[in-house]
Length: 81
Image (cartoon, rainbow, N blue to C red; front, side, top):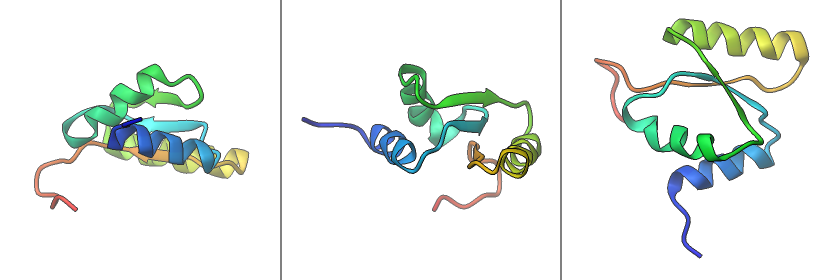
């Protein structure tokens, strides 16, 4: 059975107990967001700004003690890892 890299990432996040991802789609993370659409175990909280996603994930983690994960597209001037 072949699965995509995005599906591997989603499965890894599920195994780590991630329930919420904060961010917005674009660029190199589009495949991950496509996989999130089909997955009902992880909820996407759509933000309107990169900094908003970071603050939302941080606030969620502090308030609940659970993992808050930001997922953001690559912006201008950011090197591709």
